[in-house]
Image 1 (cartoon, rainbow, N blue to C red):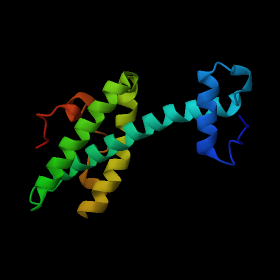
Image 2 (cartoon, rainbow, N blue to C red; image 1 turned 90 degrees about the horizontal axis):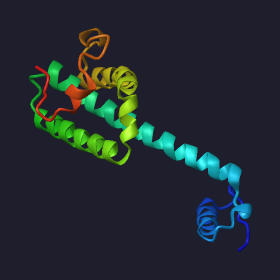
Image 3 (cartoon, rainbow, N blue to C red; image 1 turned 180 degrees about the vertical axis):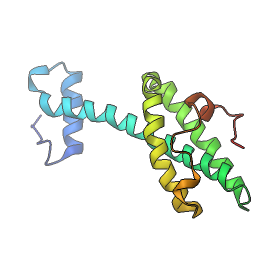
Length: 145
């Protein structure tokens, strides 16, 4: 098997690395790039978790602070969807729960910007810090008043 350069053809490189692992040809593995890719996979999982939390929080804010919006049902469906997607992520990667509090704080800051942009309400409308716990935002029965 020829050695495909990591940057020349990423897809082919992944196929070759997997084959080398299957054949236990560890001495031929592109270890430095393989380590980088595995670390990147973990970061990608956490980033996806954070993004879903941002979307959920933004819609919870819109739900609470724009109660007269005529199309709230779509927000409710987005809230349900994001909770399900986050729960699925946590089932696949339970260790993400250890980062939930930190991610909630960071995600809330981004969610406020999105809520401000989408509602037209001033930033001062929204609490400075997230008013809900991770358990609350994940609770299917929780909808802020």
